[in-house]
Image (tube, rainbow, N blue to C red):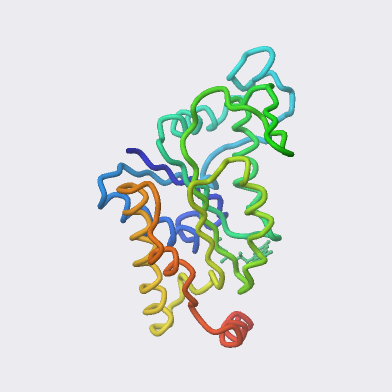
Length: 223
Ligand SMILES: Cc1cc2nc3c(=O)[nH]c(=O)nc-3n(C[C@H](O)[C@H](O)[C@H](O)COP(=O)(O)O)c2cc1C
């Protein structure tokens, strides 16, 4: 099984987001998966031009030549892809959104209607999707727009970490708590590969508090 993380943080390898997915991939590797992380910020990805050539003139092929050609190949060869992003203004970063817009060659002009939803159809069988995000603020509300945005991808798992600015803290006490949390993230990676889902215990661990609210607000206000 191949799992690829597409990291949409402008901070790339130094991101809080990467702390989460590194732990997850470690667990996935322990269960036998082959893994890769793509830092989108390092890639040359132009904006989608909205010309729909990839649907009507050259189906499946974009008119632009940039790193998306290679990235679409990596995507298609993956069994699971993880979209990983910090919350920027209640949603994914522009970096990840730009990448996702350019996935349109893999969709097709057919509209699929299910209950009250109308979505674009996929032109081929696509990898399963997992979402990772961390938010600088404590409230779970910071993830609600992202959660809605990713619904059409039918994620098999969504891992949302509030108080995300603690993930790369240099404070020893905080590091201990983060290490405790990352054990659950690693376990989630292991279980997803082994069982295709996570256990209730792991789910509860992913929701553990890293720091009481007021302490965290004091912590981030120090800058
Ligand atoms: C432009 C910008 C917008 C942000 N918007 C939010 C937000 O709406 N909600 C939130 O909780 N944090 C917000 N943050 C804080 C980031 O989510 C936080 O710093 C996060 O830990 C960065 O993760 P990274 O290291 O993976 O890039 C914002 C940060 C920036 C730079």
